[in-house]
Length: 225
Image 1: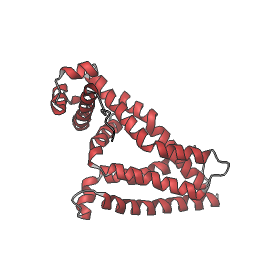
Image 2: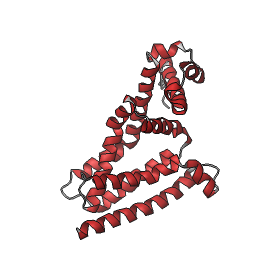
Image 3: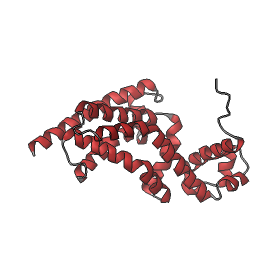
Image 4: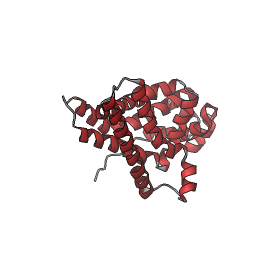
């Protein structure tokens, strides 16, 4: 059993403030108040200044936390993709498997309640981007999007730098994101009370079927060109 404390008191306070800030910023954007953030975190309002400096600095700290969270969760998939790209002729079955694994992992993350605030934060940044989104984009989203585009291109024989290939990749990701952004719609339509592991598996089975249609269709188009 590990008896080493996971965090110091200061690290715990910072973690609580980040969690509260993600919830408040996700709900209200930069209109969220430091008073409400501190109250939700169970911390004195002065703790925000002490640990982060200002509300804007706390907002950027949330962006950093999101980048770290996404990067940590998808690092194995990125490493596996880079290993495949290092091969002279990457195995198509391995490419297919990696695409499915990465998409399944994304579905599992996006159907969990504890990632809702993260999604709200990023969604706000999509419509009204700030320097915070640029940081998240450059750190993790652009590299991951690029890796998936290259995997799809390698499988289908398309050019990974072609705008159409990038759009196809984004459309595929959109299928997964729809279950987070349109969460209430699918819960009501399917008669589900909430997402759980069983529901996530059902979603993955449908999405994986669509992924196969997309990959097969793009491959056929490439062969005809």
